[in-house]
Image 1 (tube, rainbow, N blue to C red):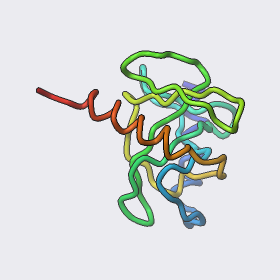
Image 2: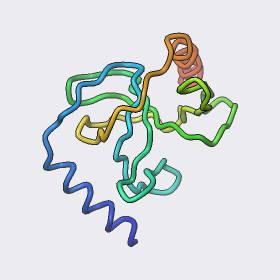
Image 3: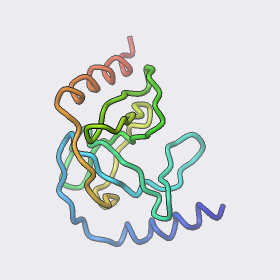
Length: 130
């Protein structure tokens, strides 16, 4: 419960702050995503940060984001890609969700067009309900 209490204090700060970042699809930002429930992806460190890929921008304030991890899992719920030329990263497709821009802490980089195209194909297959 201590982690949830710590996160609650940070969340209060996030809610009261003004949005400072403009963002675009394919960009990767460190977001304050928090201490979440059960198997939902958590942030790490004292600010509960995690890198998140901007998958779809809905407005200047909201976007659909995919949390990233350095734990490499090459299977249907993840997309592995090279990030910052040498670093491998993994997009957790099953953790895709709506984020508010107020959660953005700082920019980290950008996914290549080639990888983004492949990720979209994989996500479409994952979401195919037929």
